[in-house]
Length: 297
Image (cartoon, rainbow, N blue to C red):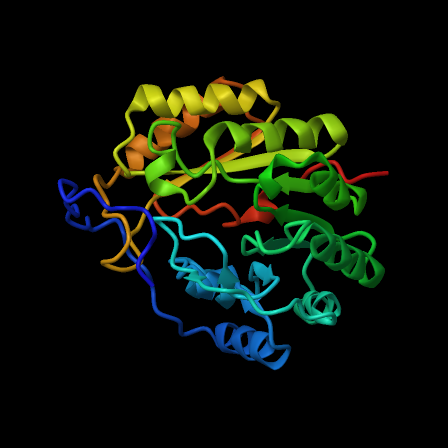
């Protein structure tokens, strides 16, 4: 489906450089992971968002579970997830996700969801039920949630936090100037408020965010976004190259060289982020377990 945001015809797709490479699957673990997800009737952001790392992650037996269906109520200019009227929530989905986590023997699990603006709570209770189901299966597992903005409603954020995730992740996606073009309905300041309130409502939770580069942002704008995130207490930052999923989505304005990503990572660490992942193929949940938060007592 074409994205709702109007694409500027003056923007041209940059030529893909040699460092953007994706290896096709050959590891049998990839196929067993795919079969497991299919068997439990689950969705993953790996598939729905056409993540370039899905071959690598699935070959290692990891996947980011996407709850609340695979139809999103928003139409962001960068995202390949289908925009359509969502189906009703599946009541047994939290238990199926917990079973997948058990079978995959995960120690760190990432749970995300499509935006569900059709629901009063934006899907917050479904997040909480999924967290609780995983906790019942394994109380020691590190649970990271990658949540939508819930329109920055405190009561929705609180519902998720009450289920005690270890990491509360909400992506800024891009710099403030480009947000209206890149994101559907979402606002830059709203996302900052979400991250600020999560830390205020639950000081022990680790807050995390991610941005894409190559959409036409400037370095000062990117550094300002880092400052804005640090100001609201965000501890973990991911930065990766935007890759155009289809010709109907926003074009890549620029491919950022690996050395430049290293530079961005150095700047972010100097600004005080506790953990930074910065590279062309980095995504918000890529190698998420590399960061080890202090698990709640």
